[in-house]
Image (cartoon, rainbow, N blue to C red):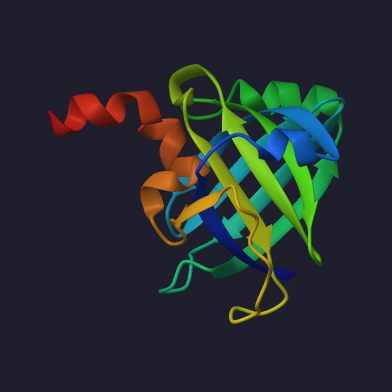
Amino acid sequence: MKLEIERKFLLLNENFKDEAISFHRIAQGYLSSHPNRTVRVRIKEKSAYLTIKGASTASGTSRFEWEREIPLKEAEALLELCESGRIDKIRYEVKYGNHLFEVDEFWGDNQGLILAEVELRHEDEEFAKPGWLGKEVTGEAKYYNSTLSRHPFNSWEKLSS
C-alpha cells in the first residue's frame, strides 16, 4: 500500500515540451469514479495498469493508491466495461530540480486542458517551480481525471452559460 502525495497545477505556456525527457500516449477509463474510491484502467503505450485510489485528504494533496501492472489484453477488455467517458492524453515527463513533473496534455473531450503534477515525499515538501507552472489546482475536484471523464473540460463553458 502506498500513500500518493502530489500537487497539481495549470500551465502558463507549453515551454515544458522543450524540457521533456520522455512522453507517452495514455488511454484510461474508470470502472468506478466514486470520489471515495476510484478504480482506473490505464493503457500506456504497450503496458497496462489497474489502479485503485482512495478519497483525498481535505487539502487534496494525499490519498491511498494501489497499482498493479496487468496484461494488455485484459486492460483492453476492462476498458470496455468502464463507465462512459474516457481520458486520452499525452504525458510528458520533465525533470526540474530534484523532482519529476508529469505534464498531461489532454485530447478528445478534454482537448485544450494541460495539467502538471509533481509527486512529493511529504505534504509540506519544498520543490523548485519551473517558469511554465501556473495556478495551483491541488484539491480542485474538477481537475481530477475521474471527474474529467464524466464532466469533460470542453463542456465547462456550456455548463456555466
